Image (tube, rainbow, N blue to C red; front, side, top):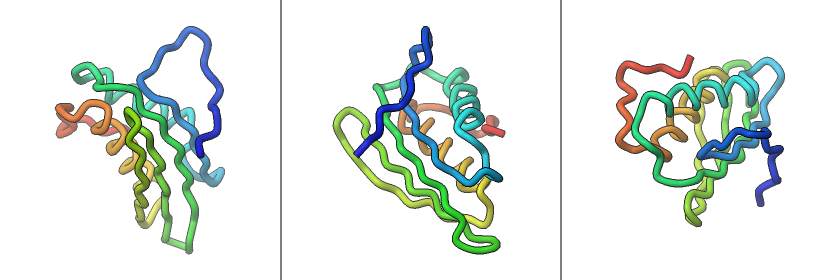
Length: 112
């Protein structure tokens, strides 16, 4: 179930994002900025993506990010694991960018 995110006045984005992460990890504002940057360099998006992401620290160097998505009525869950919260955050941002714009050339662009 998705929680209704706050809507930024006057900004129309192809995604809705709820980002829950430990305070030492990238926050929702930064994730939105990275995703906007990637989407600005590509073609138009294919639709509207709803995302709820929950990032958890499992150990000293173990992080898991659960990514719940709804894209055009197709819901899905993915779990991304990595050794740092930034690495799983970058993986999540790249995943979202490719869902919205699959023809996106991400070879030279990095969200960070």
